Length: 212
Length: 185
Image (cartoon, rainbow over all chains, first blue to last red):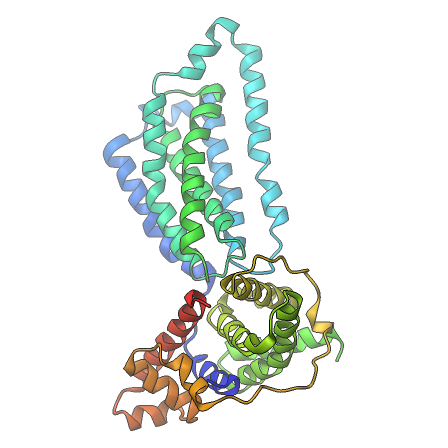
């Protein structure tokens, strides 16, 4: 085909307006999160007296940290599908989460006697955590990857990793309200492993699915 | 026009195109073509390859610009978006031809277009890309692209609704982009 002919066809096709990325993102993420929420309500559910627990600093810290991760990774995901968009700022903003977690760990180590450290770290439910967070994050991950296909990620694997991180954060935020282990030591180990798993899965899937 | 002003002008045309002004959109693509062509030739030459494939790279890039136009924010600068797309398709084209090469990030809006237009094509070449499409899409894309039919003309000629023509055209173009991407050298 001659280039001029192609341009004629492209112009004729321009009347078919594609969905904006933000709308594509919302229209897939809402059902994705709805599935995660259903799984959560059916299989896990909130801890008893969950609202009263918000007065407990460790619980509050854990919930706020996961919600913060949702926010900062969500900001990143909204950018990775846009070629030429400034993403360094959004990527650097992610560092706020490990920094806060580090502060939480320090506070925990200063207030809890050494003898209890390993017990806090191992918790009562590590395996459950490792299974639940990825399971809750799976539907959101599929949704986010699907919406990113509408965009044009310059680095498909990295964009997929960002999608996995957001999906992991969503799973973790839900799971945090169910899990009885509140110590920052527990969160730092098991939540990190579970979220990393989804991040790697997202990167692998993204490398295949997000090429354009 | 200086690079910066030119990019603002392109952004203007792109916004008009997004608002439904097909003529502005077509003008934009025609203005981008010589710039993309110079860029493709330079990229291929820089990788030590013959520039006979340059027109394929130009067409792949135009398809990507079109199919991914929603990834440009209307209030974002147009130049970085365009360069990122062109760079991505250039790397893709080199990789497909068996090279792993990192391109310098440079500002190609300043590139002087060399004035040479599209090379002449053999009739076989015109058909080459269309052949990959299923018959229905191929017929529609050919009628609109090569024969210059409008959506309404094509609808009347093939006794289809204009909605069905639009869908076939859009699917045909998407399939063409996919084919370009996965085609082996």
